[in-house]
Length: 233
Ligand code: ATP
Image (cartoon, rainbow, N blue to C red; front, side, top):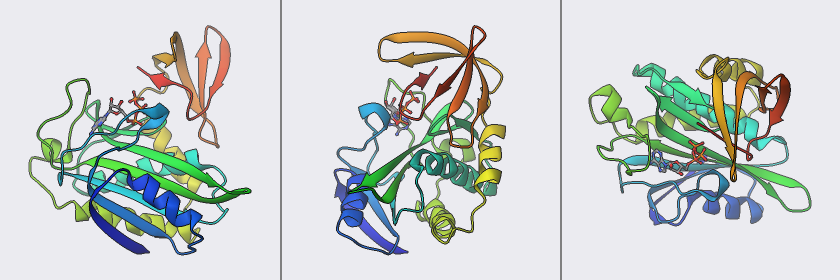
């Protein structure tokens, strides 16, 4: 895997997207110390304190991964596997977050890259490694906060590169990974508030399907939710 490091960029996902659109065939990782326009889902912003978090986007060229959201779920599990090595307890929040004690430690942003069909997938990871302070409006934490000591940002980077190379070589068992995601999804079986634009519903999370969609039971009616649709509260 090619690794490219930067001090300040707008968005590592955008660099990875450009790399794929230029026709590069080798997988690559774009790493930055700071993003000025870090992206989240639904047009939201990923904030960082320069040098204190892992900000990396993987570019996987090719048409193998026709379901980018599923790769996003898998990447959340890869982050969790790294936390297990420390160890730090973790959980998943569907569809794209990793939490420690209910607080967000990582956000994942998968994006399909299209040009007359799917030409690649980008998976961005924002992982709070060494921060002590967080944006006021977020329930956030860092690995340092949970683990009790600072860690080199390269450590989780190396683990994620190792797993992404396996993804690219297609030696990763997505069924097993999805089972782990579900097992770590602490809201499974519980009542959730679901927000989409201005609407709020309540439902019980009953399953996550093979394609990564969430099934909610809303007053007896089963509703399938896709990756970009809702926010769970
Ligand atoms: P939600 O957790 O509400 O479902 P989301 O999945 O839509 O959020 P993400 O794409 O994971 O959001 O990331 C954007 C959101 O994450 C922001 O709106 C903000 O609330 C929160 N956030 C931004 N920066 C950080 C950070 N460094 N650590 C934790 N949370 C953050």
